[in-house]
Image 1 (cartoon, rainbow, N blue to C red):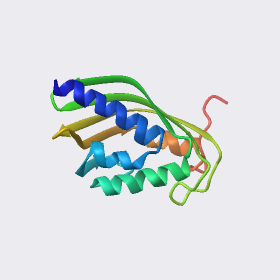
Image 2: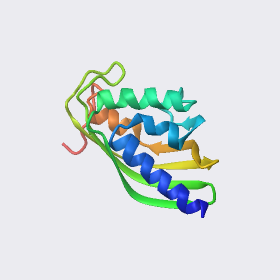
Image 3: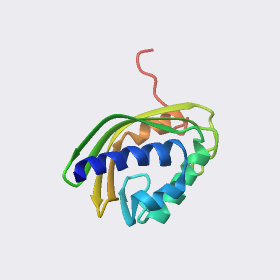
Image 4: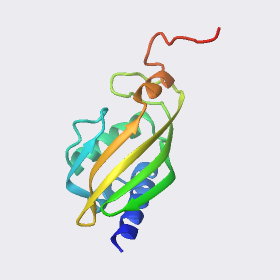
Length: 144
């Protein structure tokens, strides 16, 4: 029973928060003391900090979209294999807009407690994003 609820909450969070930018939903689906395990967002240690992080991402990538490619739930965990796309039209930290389209693939494991997402572990290639937005000044071209 809880497994199906966790699965539904994970889907709802992806659609409402990531795809629609409805940050008010964070309070409904993420624990107040949410902990994020993401090398690029280590400072996210609460639902409030998660809102600020996503606000900044949406400034840099206003059309960002997460497509769920697989979703597996067992016990208090949900594993999501996803594809994330967006266009870099705003500052990403100190990196000016490149207007490049970005595609990332990754996996997130979410742990649920009391019906909310309490913790998340992210795995993706952050350097792939930086290459796509031109943040690395000299990318090596192979095969030329």
